[in-house]
Image 1: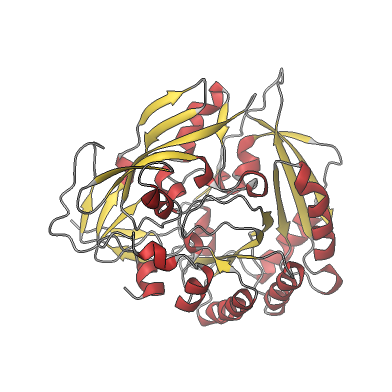
Image 2: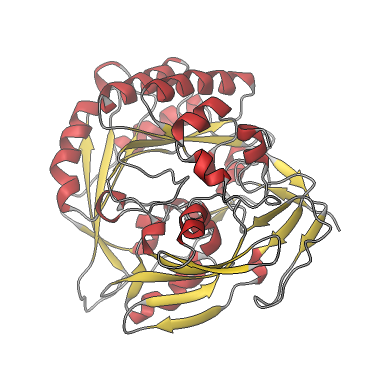
Length: 435
């Protein structure tokens, strides 16, 4: 039975030929008469990396069981269809946390590995793949491989960041981070422009576990790149714990038009930048610090029925200030500012994933309402800037990257092709590689 699958940006969709709903991790699926396969997790990738039209789709959410939890050493083994939220509900009360987490807790474990997701602490510890101990990979031939740095290492490093194209991740074992309680100690610092951002980052990144900045994309002139810099650390032992506030916000329907436009952005950016800030550290629960947008159910519907794009790139530290400034000037000039504009630095600890996005440099993530050709024309300008700077675009958030930009940004592509499963394929892969 066919089914329509969507990505989070709601720009792309795909209709499957056949759906697999595995209920046992030990039972093989019949791929003999299948030409095209892809695993679908929770649909939180923004573009088409999680979609494959006219393919047989493995719905991994049916495999969402815990297998083993070593509470003493912080080693967790579970099926790959489980979400990070479900993992956190189990481990946080026992004094453990995810070593790396992206900006949403609703991605699956398999999706986190396949995209080698990164977080606010990449500068200090690296990406999600750095904390994967081993996993089971099922190929389209139904051969099953236990993959780790010591066993089937070639498949291990191809699968981390491998966009779900080396096979089906059935289960995985990960290393956790010890914590005292669910609280975070956070600070915020307002900066007036990009020069102040880079000065702040130099001062604060080395001594803070988590760092990230929000940017006002509509600012220009002497205020170009103004924003707020946030730092965070897991709290020590506290007598009184802060509990997360229940989410009462949500978008039950798709709006006919986007609520995110230059007028609403101007108001939001002004109020957010000028909001009252505490000069002292603030104690808060981990959820609003790591997952602020998760508090708004179906927040992607704010962009209306036409959906939205996310554009995230990373560029080397060399000339990063000038490159980011050029990007922001083009966005401000066209009055196409982003509601979500996140700027942060990445460190030099790599997972070894052949197609991993995370690498040393500066990364900027931006959301844009879908305005058709106007949006695509902006991306082509930004693509050229990223290309000339020696940067790369994040496949998990991409919907229109050119083949040239993909090949230039991922120099291990030829090595990866040798390990890609011949039947596993996505719309993204066919778009950027042509297979």
